Image 1 (cartoon, each protein chain N blue to C red):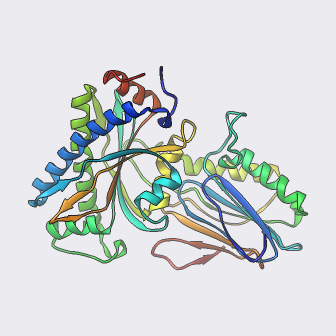
Image 2: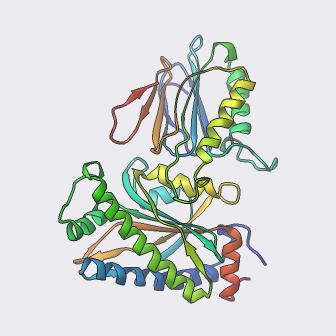
Image 3: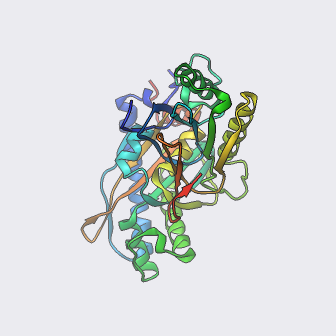
Length: 161
Length: 207
């Protein structure tokens, strides 16, 4: 799992140790969550799409914030991650379209962000930095060697979270 | 038998959707021809049921900037309809309407965006009107909403909206042809599953 660039699709999670980078493209209303334990240089990136898994038989664990975060923490902890040392950053949760007369439409991004924050608080994991909301898509990348998180948006310079 | 997701549609059902879409898109091409005062032809559409990543690959690159117009359907059919302009299609429209052309969406101003939104809306409305008449349903349309953004981010909107029902999109790909050049564009019609069943029943093909 070292020295490689990993790509995370929608509703997926990957993690790596030591070096390389993990990237997820074009987060719209979805949320990207990075976790990084600097002591062992273990980093992961989760890309969730919806707040909660309502059907317990649904095998797509990483599609939902609740089941996805739980599984991410479980897996990374098995590789030595300590929650107390871990740096968490989140990005995404945009509202891509605004429909006049229907303000509820497209609020999923906001609901995703609220759910992720609530769950992380319950896990007692502090969010070190975030770039959420707005009306534009974001690409999120974590550098495993140093935990640096980069956000790429159309028409704006890269941003370090 | 009622279907529970797009991917359960059988070949006959997909064929009927294709037939109807073909009439819808030719109406759209006619409206566009009138508006641009230019001959616009259209290829026979393919209707495919695709996952998110397949849909992105089919239309373009995940981080590619595109313009999109979105309209919400209600009444007999609930759902979303999305029209995606890529650069070449946007230029054909803007050259004719405003007399400008660009190399990237980032150079455009609000005037250009609103022209694209209007054209997207006209294409969607003529498509949906023809579709509704043929199927025999009433479909109300919301005012259009649009954005210029990464293709991947735009396609997550319908995927998230129906995320609890399905992981698939129904992609209608009919290419507009202007001056002999095929333009890249994409129309996504996304009735919710209940509405899709209603459409198939109305058409008498529900298996």
